[in-house]
Image 1: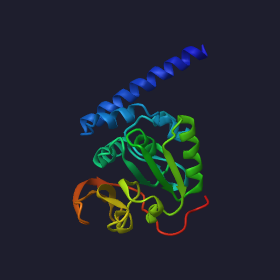
Image 2: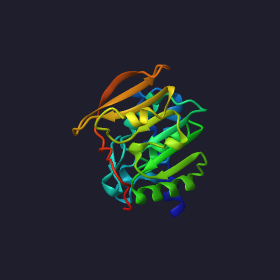
Image 3: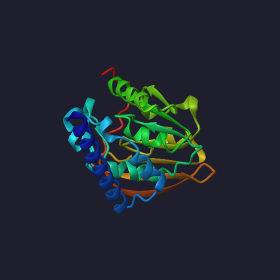
Image 4: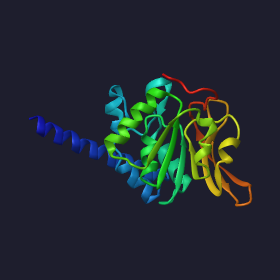
Length: 223
């Protein structure tokens, strides 16, 4: 009976995941690589027990330390906007649950990810190990500072709202690299893409309005 039940649960999850991918596609997430990465990532693994039945909803969900696991549409949109290539070295600011990190790991050569909450980082590292990810390098610290020792990066993704242009992070980008980040001080921010022009300048595109927790300055938290 248990075996039959687990098969049923697996089939139901597959149906929900297929429905989610169709929804993302209809909203403009068209990159085959990004959709494949989302399709092959078990979002329920990153979702707290209380919200497991909502793992395949296209909505943000609460996780520990007052943070969230991002809405799949936003994960897809940001991953697509980043235009990651198979040889890219990517810096991610804000590991969180590790869901976005896992998507990036399937698109790139290496992902360097920084998280300021020790609890979240430890849980995410456990999930990376469970999934057998070998191209994710983690760091406990203040994401606003980036990871200067490993710079420059081909791509940088910020999963918390920067109040202003993230100059420290832009300085760690390769001359023709891409940075995607929510920018703004209020509850609603602008999702922006910065594309290096090769000469120290950037082309800036405003993509859409988003809601992210703020990128906090200062020391990392032992929480």
